[in-house]
Amino acid sequence: MTDRTLWSYKDIAAHIQVRPDTIRSYRKHGLLPPPDDVRHGKPYWFVETVLAWIASRPSNRGR
Image 1 (spheres, rainbow, N blue to C red):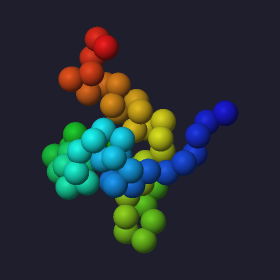
Image 2 (cartoon, one colour):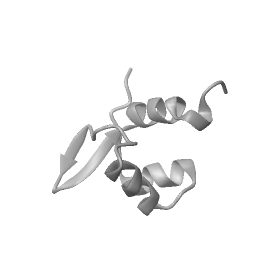
Image 3 (tube, helix red, strand yellow):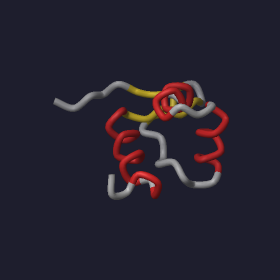
Image 4 (cartoon, rainbow, N blue to C red):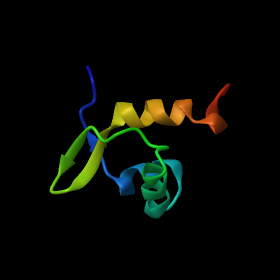
């Protein structure tokens, strides 16, 4: 079954141990995938989207 939990900037930041502003910057510079949902003007990503993004980041290739 697919996890349909949505993560915010804060959730993603906590998972990869950076500040939420870092995640916002990643999005601004096109380094974060497009959000899976936008609620009240705020972007959210499915956990599976975030995990796939993390796995594809250059610093994580080959791990």
